[in-house]
Image 1 (cartoon, helix red, strand yellow):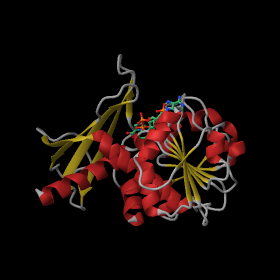
Image 2 (cartoon, helix red, strand yellow):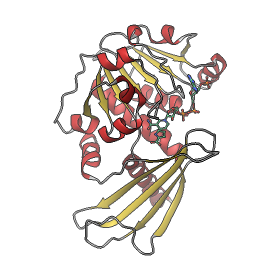
Image 3 (tube, protein in one colour):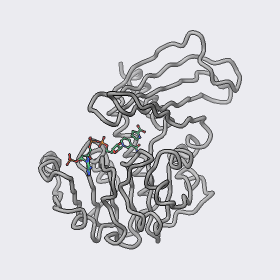
Image 4 (cartoon, helix red, strand yellow):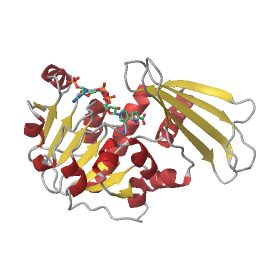
Length: 290
Ligand SMILES: NC(=O)C1=CN([C@@H]2O[C@H](COP(=O)(O)OP(=O)(O)OC[C@H]3O[C@@H](n4cnc5c(N)ncnc54)[C@H](OP(=O)(O)O)[C@@H]3O)[C@@H](O)[C@H]2O)C=CC1
Ligand SMILES: O=C([O-])C1=[NH+]CCC1
């Protein structure tokens, strides 16, 4: 599976998200991915996802599919066939957590006993689900800006999770930390982070937004999903001046090492190709069952 991910991240064409500032949505991100099947470049599928970062409304993935001519030109066939429209929020939640889980598999300390999740929204929940399914932790902690929201998050779960009153209390001693908040200023400070811990940093997806402070960004080994995306979209990287060590795909394909023994940050921004692959899997499952 990891090899497949490396292949997808490196061999499939992917495009940087387009960011539009539109009142009253404020910011619309449109991500786009193209999937092609086999060397013949037949049955290509183009997906586009529109989402917005400022108001609560559904995101949609559109999959348009048709057979392209055997060429390198990625223009839309005329006329494209609309295959499906999907709920992009559900797919975004799952695919983002899946990619973070790959980062944790590669970079978390060998002995990881404490998981800490900052935030209690959709991403916090999908990360809780995937991380506790794939890895065994002795303790899980959650912090949210509103303690009530953290309590509500915990009430929905079967297993015990500790609600913390402050970020500091939540992260001290944690081996794996997920930051999945709407913060625009740093909430996680390097001085609190256990040396060797792994941080999957999911929020702060605008060039002027932060979740992590300069100390953490500069001291950790920083991995990203896409260098191009990170240097255009991540305030944590742009404003701290931190150096990106490698892309996740570059670790999976063996070009760069996983520095598991050091403090590591995986700065996630999200890529259209992740949506495209996930949407394709959902569509194939749907088609095989109905
Ligand atoms: N990397 C990627 O691929 C993706 C990243 N994201 C990003 O992940 C983050 C979480 O998304 P999602 O879970 O869908 O959002 P939700 O709206 O479901 O949850 C937002 C969470 O952030 C908290 N929060 C909001 N503002 C602040 C603040 N100023 N300081 C601290 N906490 C705050 C909320 O806390 P409370 O409710 O307690 O107030 C809530 O727990 C967002 O930044 C989003 O842009 C989203 C999708 C993909
Ligand atoms: O990839 C994505 O869908 C997003 N990245 C940042 C916010 C939404």
